[in-house]
Image (cartoon, rainbow, N blue to C red; front, side, top):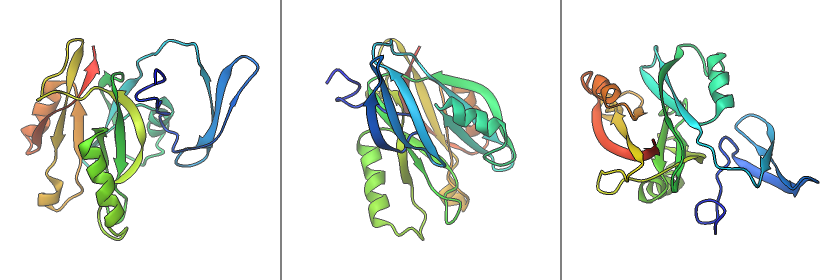
Length: 209
């Protein structure tokens, strides 16, 4: 039970695990798949936990925001793999905490062509249930992975040693465009999109200082 949250340890970017092994130096080898190819990851089992930066991107064509904890994915976006218009905003927050964060994606067709994140719990479970009963021909959120770790707020308040990560919604469903959310620990960044008509949904998670 001391291995990760409830005995679990998320592997960011890896969607499935096909094999596990220990090498001669007691390192854990994990073979699996990401969204496009086979992946082999190696883990030091005696290492200290490090805090991965969650990097924010903005698409100048779509007016969409995106975050990722995967340095490889971030580098690929920098290289144009996600299409044109993506730039780093310079904003980021840290991973770390008590609870895995569920990552969802809609679809290019029928949509929404966007990602959504929520700490594992009622909201995550509800979206998984909706996915199970919603035909693939209709808009829905599709669970991708446990992307990083954070701490859920209590009544909108974050515990000592953490900072709030706010969530804003572009009200895409009502506007007839793809839904998109911005996640940021910078209150000014959230206020900037709110002045453009986005909805401030409050504190979504709590990141380490």
